[in-house]
Amino acid sequence: MSMNVTENRNRTAALDYLKWLWPTVSLMSTAFVFAALMTILTPLTTDRLDIVTRFLLWFSMCLLGGLGVLLADLFLRYFQVMANAGVSINVRAAGASMPVFLTLFIYGWGRSWLAGPTLFFYIYVIAVLITALSALLSRLSRFQNTQEITPSEAEPAVVEPPLFNKLPIQMRHGTLYAISSEDHYVKVHTSIGDYMLRSSLTNAISLTGNLSGVRTHRCWWIAENGIDKIKKWDGRKQVQLKSGICAPVSRNGARELRSLKWF
Image 1 (tube, helix red, strand yellow):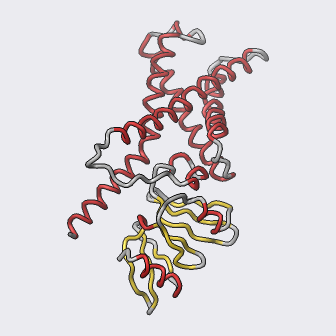
Image 2: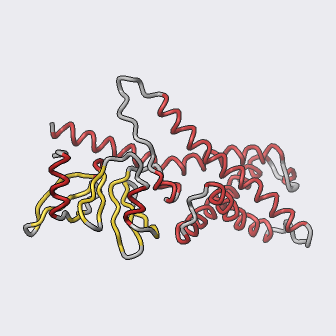
Image 3: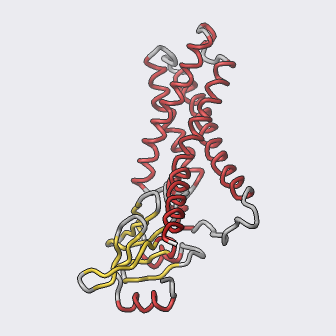
C-alpha cells in the first residue's frame, strides 16, 4: 500500500514537472520554427548572409526574445495583471521585442526616424505571433492529453479552478494545494510554487470551483489533493501539505476533517 502511494506521488511530481516545463519547450520549438521561416524569407536584407549564419542569427534573436518574455513575466507577476490572456500576450510580446530591437539597432538596423518604428512594429508582430502560437500549442497539448485517456484510465474530472486565471501562465498547470491568508493578501500554494494575490481568503476560496477542500483554520483553506498527512506538534494538530509546508488546524477545522473522513 505504501509502495503504491509512493509511486503515485512520484508520478504526480513527474507530471507536475512536465507541465511546468512544457511552456518553455513549446516556446523553444516555436522559436525554432520561426527562425527557420525567417531564414527562408530573408527579411531585413539578411539574404547577404549564408544560410547557417542566417538561421543562427534569427534563432539567437528568438532566444533573446525569450529573455524579454521572462522579464515581462516578472513584470506581470509583480503588478498582478495575469487575468487577461490578451494583456499577457501583448506584454510578453513587447518584452520580447525590446531586446531584439535594441540588438538589431546596435548592429545598424533601423537607425533612421522612419526605419526605427517600422522595424520595432515588424518585430512586435512577429513576437505576438510567437507568443500566441506558444500559448495555443500549450492548450492543444493539454486537450490532446485529455483525449488520449481511455475510459478505464480516466479519473474523476477536475475542472481547472477559476483562481488559476489569476496566476502566472507557467503556474496554471500545477495542482492547487492550499490557500493561506496574509494581511490583505492570500498565498496560493501549488505543486509548482507559491504566489501572492491581493484578495480576501473568502473571495479566493470562492474561486476554487469544484475542488474538494476544507477551511482548517481562519487563515487556511486546504485542498484534499494537497494533503500529505495530518500530524501533531506541541499538542496541536497540523496538516502537512505535499510541498512540506505545515498548516494549522483549529478545533472547528479538526471537526471538519473528521467529518469528511479523508483519513
